[in-house]
Amino acid sequence: MKIFKYSEARQNFSTVLNTALKEEVIITRKDGNRFKLVPINKKAKKSPFDIEGIDTDITTQEIIEIIRECREGSDYVKNKYQ
Image 1 (cartoon, rainbow, N blue to C red):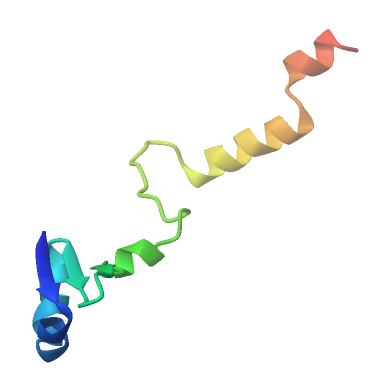
Image 2: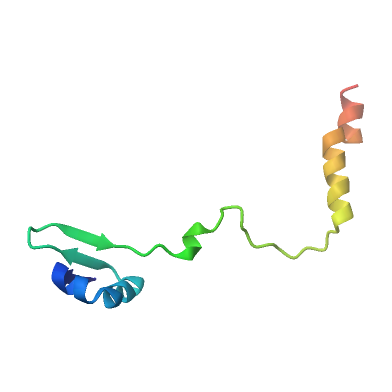
């Protein structure tokens, strides 16, 4: 954690921002108020639906058939409850 006085942070703002990318930065004012500088990374804007895929041996056609069977109901379910 790095602590900067307000006047020092104002004069060396670029340095303060670069430091905040690597570690926590606190800026203190004469009146005793303290502020934490936190970077907002581009990674934080990543959608929760952006997930890595997995390699499988299943084809697109097989996936479509599985979904269709689930929607229509399997023969086992149809025969059991008729």
